[in-house]
Length: 188
Image (tube, rainbow, N blue to C red; front, side, top):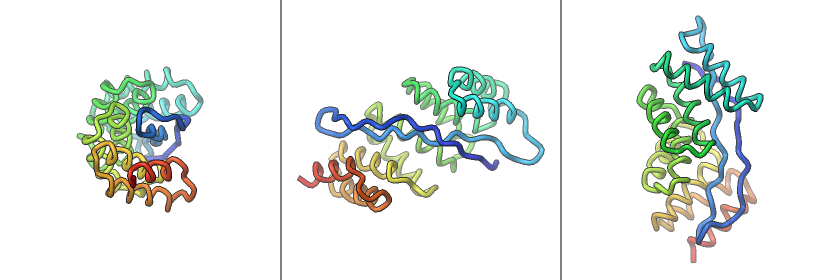
């Protein structure tokens, strides 16, 4: 199914947590269902996207939950539900929903990036690394994606690969201060 994107982004944090910088909390886009002959469940998903865009996240989450129950084979319903749950800090539920979306559509980069970020925030670094690597192969990654990949690598002690990911993040966003700071940390 084709998807329309809408960016839902949480503010980034510049604070330090222990020795490592915190992940960039740039959540991936919600996906609306846009296809000819609107499939079952599309109306619920698209209503949820409209509600989320307007800031009514609780109502949006309810719409996505309803869509995922009524139409369990619609990956966008599980994707969007997972993204909103992750933004709410409900990571176990979010990861289950995002994994369900990936079971239905293994090539869905938004689900991979959302899962990776949720795992990284929970400090499941090896799983986050695997999800980020899969996401990078399936889409045009952002500087934030490369930074978060670098953070997972650094936490796992893979300093050279972490520095390389920081360089890629700074190539995509010159002057990215947190990537420069993490690179200095891993190159010590």
